[in-house]
Image (cartoon, rainbow, N blue to C red; front, side, top):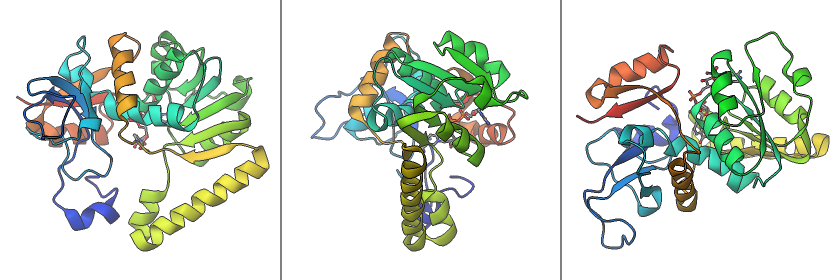
Length: 291
Ligand SMILES: NC(=O)c1ccc[n+]([C@@H]2O[C@H](COP(=O)([O-])OP(=O)(O)OC[C@H]3O[C@@H](n4cnc5c(N)ncnc54)[C@H](OP(=O)(O)O)[C@@H]3O)[C@@H](O)[C@H]2O)c1
């Protein structure tokens, strides 16, 4: 967003406050809020199009965007979870509606969304296969994945993964991973990519042309894959989901869902934090802390 992603929406509304995830204490509540009280420790995430983000001393969220913080987690640990886990939740629970015994392929299980998806699916009793970098294999197998294939090795992923799946979550979403994901699905299965083209096309052509163009691209792909492979094709976008967030809290409290935090920065070092991520000096999750 800082370097222009979503500018078709955000540019007329600058300046923005960035940041989506939050973990902290309730400072004040509106008159209609029923489930939260001042002083309560909460965590949650803002909707992707929110203008006033969480890189602040005081963030404003709706009741639906917050849940009590898992008691066993620190604010730093809790703040790493909601946006990524809710994105995975939307794919697996709201879109593919995974059920016990189903087979899921997570392309890019090493990242925050992919790792959340593995843990949510394992907790739901699914069989999970994933692709990830060599350094992530042990972590993903420990989280319950049954097979983890190193995408950086020379192996042909399709020939190593011998089975077919009921759902594929593609967190990478490039043509190569899309081809692999689609080919490895059973008929009736769901292919879900995090790299929907709505923002990119709107940024390139402006909202009035970009959004209809994106709808047309999505519609064409849905029809194309329905006829060629008999599968459902979806773009996944994170959305606030009160029920999902509460379930994510329950999984976290039960020790079944966590996202490792690689480094914390003071919020005053936000520039250094962003640069370190941009330059890939830090691969894992970064959390900004208020002093
Ligand atoms: N649509 C939405 O609403 C939404 C929401 C959240 C995120 N996103 C997008 O989804 C993507 C993932 O987000 P994230 O937060 O999970 O990112 P992240 O934590 O930065 O994870 C990225 C990971 O992808 C893995 N990777 C890279 N290339 C790969 C490949 N060819 N095959 C398999 N794994 C590969 C790497 O894992 P290893 O360390 O194992 O190499 C890397 O750690 C980002 O592009 C993000 O912008 C979209």
